[in-house]
Image (cartoon, helix red, strand yellow):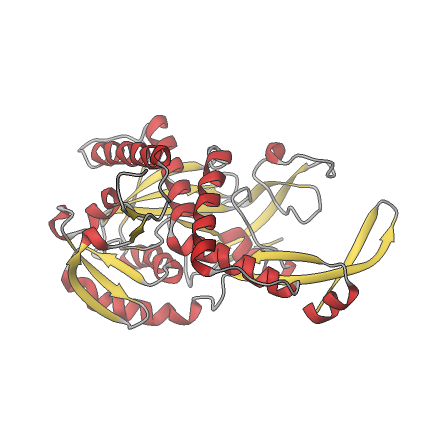
Length: 375
């Protein structure tokens, strides 16, 4: 049996840096549903549920080990003259992945996708609370099975020297992709953890942010693992990811910053997707050689056919702007085999009898402020 009944899906060791005085006691909150600031609430009771991970003592111990390791890395990062090491970078990638998969919002998205798919197929749904529990345990298995999936991503720490502090949220580990969001929407493709052009974002403190990026697509001028952010608009660009992605609550350290959080949230509220998934139902259309082709139809028509294919597509919010220091290379390198797998950073993780992957160079034009397009 787990020793802690109240289990945090955003750990207290993470939120501590955003609490008043950094002491882990009280934190300022902006609730997006009510659009109001709630000052200095108890940090202890934020982002937690009774037995969120179940009652497995071994799982609880493994989570606590990762959180202690994160705390040690954060302590080193905040020391003067720190240079990002390979070991700390690897730990931050693993912590980001675990945090990306572990939150209530992530589990809720999994539940919504499954329920939408079962509805499309005309199957009965499942009870909400029980399914949330299963989604959490599935997320834990996904983490173990894919623990190294982001290890090929380059990383750096962003030092915020602007007047706008970084904020965080109840779903703070952000996966985004400028290549897919700006270049590929017309192709009808989404992205996952293996895709080219991925960007990982996780604020660590109001003045430090962890950034992971695909160096085959983007360029960051960093020195000893650090790059500096001087413009408040660039800090706000990172904060907009928290505002677009959070489930209900944003967190920030200084009470006086609450009014600006409200103003900035109002600017991007319409960019929050009403749903974080799309469901496509397809039925068999024809065969050509070794390939079968399907066409998209309404769920009712698909159910009448008796056999169908259901495709689930993740929906990611697109930010209004990107930080200026995250540049785009004129020539980007991706791997593709022309299937629905899309553009991958590396083909090694793909298995099965798919067509072979080939390396492709994309001509990317534009600037961080004007956007990018495929040549």
